[in-house]
Amino acid sequence: MEAIADNASSLLRETSLFSAWPEALLNTLLTQSKKVTLGSGDILFVEKATANAFYLVLSGRIHLIAAAATGQEKIIEIIQINDLFAEAVAFLGGCYPVTAAADGPTTVLEIPLALFLKILEQKPQLMRQMLAQLSMRLHFLVKELRHLSVESAEQRLASYLLELCPVVNSPAAIELPAKKAAVAARLGLTPETLSRVLSRMRKAGLIEVEQRTISIPDPLALRRWAGGR
Image 1 (cartoon, rainbow, N blue to C red):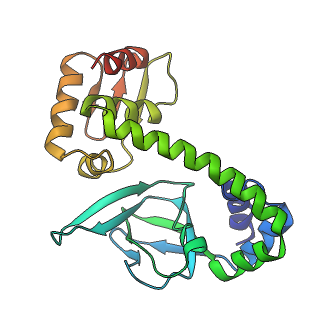
Image 2: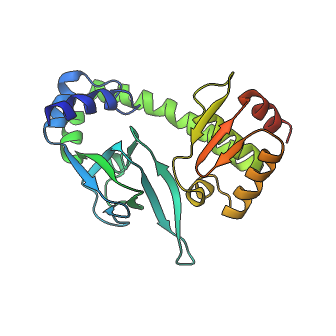
Image 3: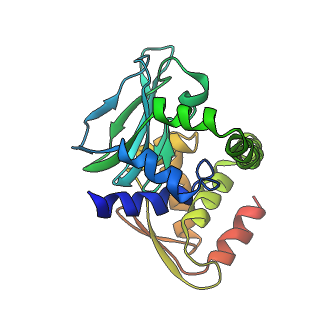
């Protein structure tokens, strides 16, 4: 458990929410945090359930799912390893706005809201530092939202693939973090549209696709192609 806590401490420090936290306070928070292991499809929490914790993904993936007006469920976000999620409820209080389900075997760190808020109430300077970090993150997300509202399907997918790409000036191979249907939902596309765009990219020689693995011979060429759409 101690090794897990040490690892979680370093992972938390890399997030916007905890980057300003001193090591001692992080360790205090971790003493009451716990690891939760989920199987594929297991539900971590359901929409409208009382929120008493938020989470860090240690392994696997989490789908955040919302019910549409039609009664169907829609994946609104794919949470990957080392990502925090449900942290907004720490400030809003109340209930979870979505359902969280594991996409394959997944392990998360459950962080108690009560202790998190108690520490912040005792450390107003730390709260101000956190607000500064979160404000910067918010500006970034607003910019991303604007891009999604004006970008074509080709531009959305190209941007997404390039975000996953470890390098931008040499060939790379990436693995989609979820099934294609989930990736399509994440990009605001239908699965059929995603398949058509992947096909166009493949015919243009920009990518090679084998199940969830996508090879990009020239990331810069993909960027130029998307910019001209």
